[in-house]
Length: 272
Image (tube, rainbow, N blue to C red; front, side, top):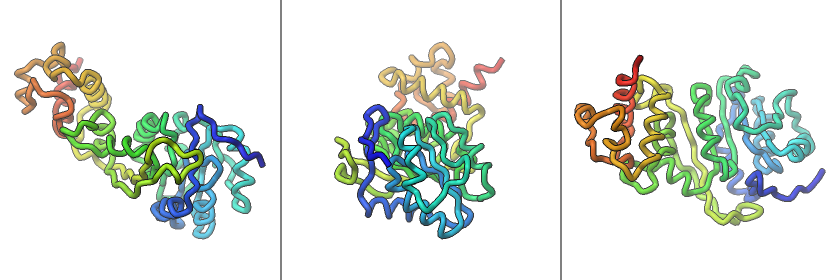
């Protein structure tokens, strides 16, 4: 088995701290009805104890690894646990259909876990939210400042598109902070582990989620401008005031409920 050096192009920082690993595994609450999917197992530091727990209770494990060499080593690293055919997926997580993956077993609880590469953590989270209806919860390690952005509220300098979109789809709970020394090689930033639990119904349902995503993207893409200026070709000041939104407000001051009303107004005005 090769002892592969971390590859910068994949953003690889391998978790080595046994205490942190144990806390993450415990947070997954694995029982006989659980199907665990790990994104980016790497050298299997987290995968191996998950596999042991899975085998002990009769659960199911799938792994998604983009690195061909690491994926090839996983069957050896996971001995004596054997992944069923089709559950070791050598692929980019952004290309995986997680609903189809869930359907490969009859387990009722579908859990996703991963020490996500910091350079593509946001795209992966957005991709996972496409399958939110099939995911019971996820436990992820990210750069601490990204977790702070996800959980930020209106008026906070870190509040942005990621905050709104993630809070529309799921509830977030911080679990623990992880120092650089818990990894090899140590990253230059502090990390954090958090649990993401998709809502059965969004707290502020909208008429069209594609319009919602567009409105949020536009609002934060020009965050120094007022809402009146950003949406001047679609929604006028009187229409903004009619939905209790100040035309001179900026995106970072709006709540999730405000964005939902803004999205519905946009949808109504853009119907064919």
